[in-house]
Image (cartoon, rainbow, N blue to C red; front, side, top):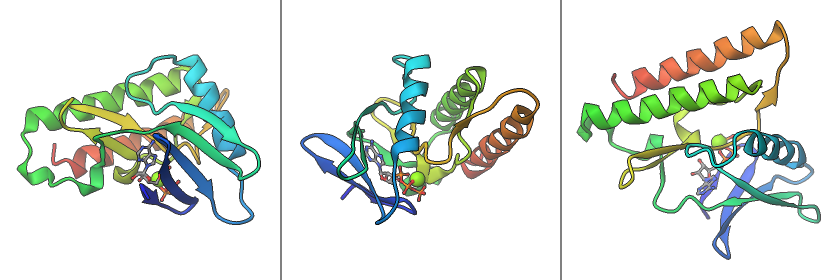
Length: 158
Ligand SMILES: Nc1ncnc2c1ncn2[C@@H]1O[C@H](COP(=O)(O)OP(=O)(O)OP(=O)(O)O)[C@@H](O)[C@H]1O
Ligand SMILES: [Mg+2]
C-alpha cells in the first residue's frame, strides 16, 4: 500500500502505482485529464505520468515515484532554506505551466506533492479535482491554485 485517500487507495503492483477508487466510483475522468496534461506537457519533470486505465477495475496506472515522500511526511524544520526554496520554485513553475495550457489542479496540498530529497525534486500528483478552463472562469481557478501555492510557501516556512 502506497497511500490511502478520499478517492480510494494506491498500491504498488509490478513496479507500477495503481490507484483504485472506492466502490461505485470511477477514475476515468482523472485518467483522461492527466493523459491530456501529459500530452500537452510531455516529459515535464515535475508532473506524475499516467500509464493507462483499467476498465474492469476502474483503476488508473501511473509511474511509481520511487524514493519519494509526500511533503507532509517530511520534518521541514530540519531542512535548509535553499533546498526548500528549490521545491517551492519547482511547484510555482509547474502550476504556471498547467495554467498556460488551460488546466487548474485545484488540490495543491502537502499530501499531493511528492518529494525526492536525493534528487532535490518535487512532483505534483493527484489530478482528481483538476480540470480545464476557458475564458473568464479561468481567473477564479488560477487564483485558487495560486493561493494554495502561497499556503505551501507558509507550510515550508519560507
Ligand atoms: N505515483 C505514485 N507513486 C508513489 N506514491 C503515490 C503515487 N501516487 C499516489 N501515491 C501515494 O498515495 C497517496 C494517495 O494518492 P492520491 O493523492 O492520488 O489519492 P487521493 O485519494 O486522491 O488522495 P486525497 O486524500 O488527496 O484525496 C499519496 O498521498 C501518495 O502518498
Ligand atoms: Mg491526494
